[in-house]
Image (tube, rainbow, N blue to C red; front, side):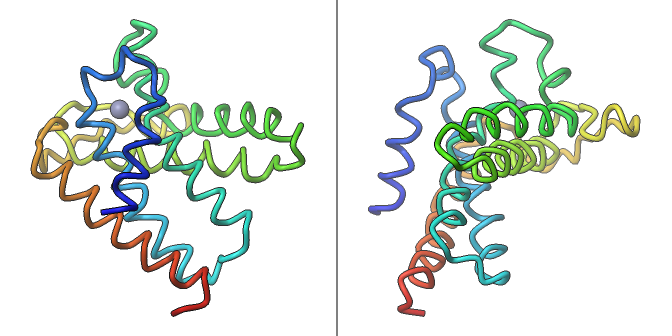
Amino acid sequence: MFIALHVERVLLILPNSLWGVQMNHKGHAGLTLLILSPTFFLLNLKDFNSVATLIFAVGFSWLPDIDLDLEMKHRKYTHNILFAIIAGIMFGVLFNFAGLWLVGFMGAFLGTICHLLGDMLTYMPFNPLWPFREMEVALEKFESNDKIVNDGMMTIGSLAFLLYLLRYAGIL
Ligand SMILES: [Zn+2]
């Protein structure tokens, strides 16, 4: 499918060291599409900045797993709401050079939040609301590298994104 291929192309620009957990990132990208497309659709967000925010959020949905790349303790410092806010501010400042601070902030923030929601469904517990609340979460619905789940999320997420794009194009 075109959209799926396009998102795969986004994945191609990820750091090489992340390829070992590629399936995981595919699932995160799919889940981000699946969460944000209907949300933006229902909120009638269909301007250029909204579409850009959604696409950047998909691109940023791998960001918390940068801890693997940096050889930090996994799912600790980069898997919480504080990191989502800091990442949002950092990319908001960066994108501000192009006059798109809100796209940068929301893209990184929402991409990180969607990543945390996906990780909460797996088996390795972490503390998503730190430092505001101590609450270890692991809903144990599936393994993070489950191929069927990751592929399924990408497929359904791509379909949801396609519907949203049709809305954006005024066809729906
Ligand atoms: Zn993660």
